[in-house]
Length: 393
Image (cartoon, rainbow, N blue to C red):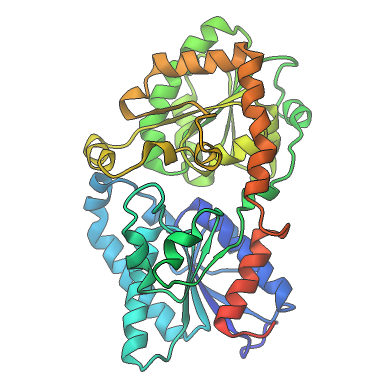
């Protein structure tokens, strides 16, 4: 049983990727404190498995794009204030927000103002996974620096953007760099995939909006590929939030589809893939590290796209390409995200050993770039949180 006097760390994660990071941080904090730490806040299934009782379901925040957010704005604003009130009332040693900037940074701003009114008394304010100022709107670095005590980053090129504005920043590394090697043969056997059959991994994203936009396009790609690769198999590793929607959408696909939501089989699923077709996001980095040749696709609402086009650096959309400074992974965004173009790109990876080898060679280079001093990001993050919070481990 945890001592009621043990330091309390308030955590906020608003989507699946942040939930995984939060769970790792909770484990790291327990290790560093010999279990003498308490948690409260907001998280998903992974953090719940570590003992967090979430303030409300994070599925409520699984929206993306300006047009998509507007109808939910009143509810999201209520949740912002509810979370800020809860965090302030619990008097934690630190509040650690993880990604989901549109939500979590609003909470941090409220807490920053309250702390100022309280004469500086209050929790340390820490954020993990900053906004992608290197991809769009670099001015956000100055804005975020006003409301935080510390920032933790996933990528080695990020700290200078924020340190220039006086925000202490630590590169802790990216968890994907330590992902285990999967067992493709075991996966094929467990899920009864025909021996020697080509396998296309399909990753349409972890948000409902992403899945709704991308799966119809991916369905057409699979239909074209199934006509050429007679024994084609499709594998879709996903998360519980969108798993049922994916199953429903893929029931009538022209190739057999295996949907896997159990995280234990995620990396085995990657290892079983011959080629992957994936939404832009962290999964593209994971696929690179797993050595899976990949084609990246993405679409958002047309209005959101028109606004984003003025703000986003297209060379920063695919993380592997950003890290390497060149387009190793082909990317098809918005109007380029068509069944015809995607099919041609996927077929090239199925058919051209040199194209597959080029992506395979990037794997170890990217792994080195994402590792900080050879230590797991969750442990470096835990050390950073305890140091900034003034908690003696």
